[in-house]
Length: 306
Image (tube, rainbow, N blue to C red; front, side, top):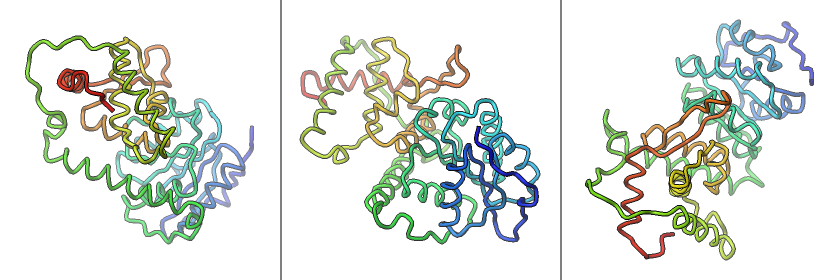
């Protein structure tokens, strides 16, 4: 196990908003600290995952917590994430969790759809954007350096467009207390023709084939790709974990998780705990979403649905 110094002499209380950094290894710690510094924020403490929950509780004031995971730390990480999930929900501070793709399922099981910024296999631009979004909630001023201004300029542009698109979707759907119920248009009652899983799979296959001829990001539509994947799984009576749904979205995992959060919050997707594995959740279509998709396929008939 990698050891990280947690000498209390390094646990500082700043007049400005300090960021507390917890990491699973020395390399992970260095990576996280670099981005916190690039944002013009001060590191209030460097913590090993095993010590982080106790140390965060001792902090009088903090602007946020950055958790960097490059491996599974078991129950220590679970306890830390559950505490941070609760604290962020209560508005105590902002938080970013950066992890590898192997940790998508346990993270999703623990963090639900909280306001914690979760980034997976993140680029420089992903990290900078996540820190900016998280700290903006707490009105913490950032002074981002040019850490992501060269090789990642295009990714920053894509992130900006992505956030704007999600915001537009939420603006259309979230128009009042009953927004979740209006996220799906009411459907007429009546029998529908049978829909096979093969039909939906063929549509998914056709969508993926486009990347052989054009850049895949020309057609990025993670919400629709996830809807189709869950529909074919429902018909085939298969269960879909978060990690598999992120792959089906055909976008970076960080982007897929943002869209998943949106779809769950709007009542289009439903999360189900895995009864055999507390560190995994499944995703399925809400009944209204399933009905809407089936009526859509019935309406378009034999027309190619892509």
